[in-house]
Image (cartoon, rainbow, N blue to C red; front, side, top):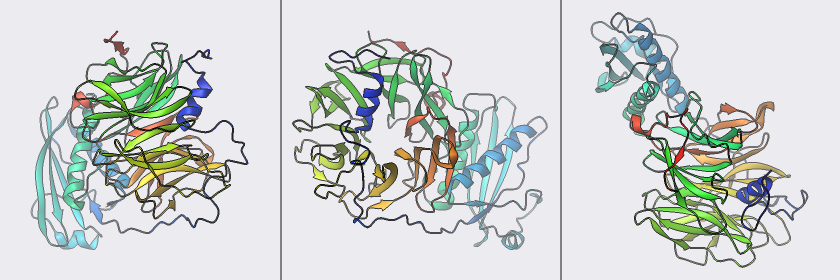
Length: 463
């Protein structure tokens, strides 16, 4: 247990602040979303065009890679919730002209043909996507791969899958992304990453200390997080390519819940000062000048999240005596209430995350003393409940604005889960009661941004 000092809070208090849960409220008082506000779980069936992918052809010695390529790509299509992989047709011949009529009978809207060329050290995947309905080739492209044992091996295949997804749907794929989260460590907790399909979970810090609230930089090559490594809780930035870190923000008191602006120019965070928390914005371009942007006497403001335009933030605050979500322009000291307020009714709404599309903000709110996920428009309209089974909290959007990763105790087991907010489909990502506070990255474009240095100690090069 960490001893409390003037600026150093105990481990349970840290979590209470990050969740922004008022410690003085009883379980009965934390009744969350008012019962007379009409919200409901509303999902709609979505048509998923069928996509067929015959076995990937490959020269001798690359057959195992070919099988893995097909398996990974079809799984990526399935997890996209936009395309329906077809089981039939894996053994269909690929030589000669494409028999569009036959593929149409098998239910395919799209046909993806893959061929591996090159050598074992430098394989190349050539993909051609066919529109079965209109009987034409949609696109053809070659992708540089890596051997499966290479640190970038699976991510290179995910990038190819995302390109096909964009050809077929005109929407960004989420396969070549990662989720950062907090997991158990020898000194308390460490930061981990995992691929979007649940493979490759690895620690990326090894500090034997307490690390919390990871946040991806828009470039995908850095992570900010709260750390107790230097005793005084500060915000560190981890360079994933080199496995080194530096102190980014260290104000007097405790600094926490960092988030990067989408344009990469700023970092918003909560700072514990004068007995409460307030939101500050740090200028990343100049590397200085933390500026306070919230002002609430005797109240806490925490967990900022930027709008896609980088000019507005949403955050949770108990300035009304209840924990609510607010929206404010940077520099505007008069934030607007986003979640419903009813006099003499206690609520608990926290952990907002603004969709990359800008149209929705996801957060968790208490219902009958249990946290559930909700979304709401930035103008406060269209409040919608997303979950109802188990405890569900700390959501984070994927870059497609359709999927959310969150911590849940559903299905009798705790862990991180992924929800498709259109159809309601959920899948488990990582199991464990101690995995929490996930943050979904943007596209991981190159090996230098893959966060592969899992066995390296993270060195502080900014003492």
